[in-house]
Length: 307
Image 1: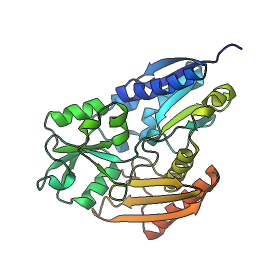
Image 2: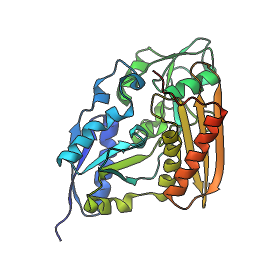
Image 3: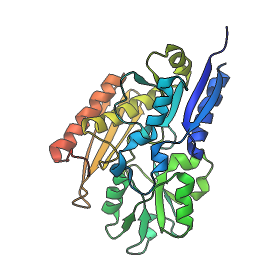
Image 4: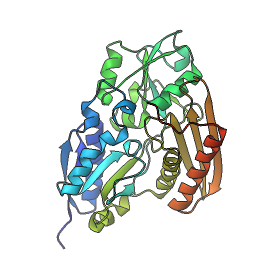
């Protein structure tokens, strides 16, 4: 039988290429012929404004979806936290792979942890989630925007623009940059973004051949966890323009889900909700996420995104 020929659409940052090459290698082990189509997205081009002000996470995936729709590519590899909660009609999240470390990492040339920073130190992040959680931990800090791919962010740090920056631990580990991590924030002090650390593989719904080829790469407990996390965000109209965090973990047949919402107008005010329940499928995981979102709403979380 003729091997399946798959073209993967990917952003051209070093991390995105690592992720695409990782999927490429696994698919080739399964007998497929796989090549990469490198692309530059709007999210890669607009670096002078925060994502919440220029259109949100979808800026990193739209061009890749156009490549899928036109037939130029068969599969798109995304960092799942960059994927909008609802995909366009005709597209499907066909596979979620085993999650890397979901935690946030503290990166600084001079300070071993957040608590070592002097009063009024400048910390870099463009994530509203990280901003509100950092402010809750250290109200004295000055939080400044930080955009660009991973290497660009590290260069800005090394140039002295920030005392430290907060990045996803997963990206640093995937690129062999573990030595840049001074410390990690445990999930109970800085709750991760929905889907953080997981890779999501997107295809057209009618590509049953590609979906079948991706099945061995899927990791069920990760998929259940991120389905719950993303359901929290979906229920709250979440995007990068909302200071929302959610993290779930499977232990046996039970899923524990934590979520948090921060109030940008009232720094330090963090609303939290969590629950544990038996979960057997994605629908049950999503229902759990919707329930936890409602707990945040009942506490007073504002569903209006940041202007």
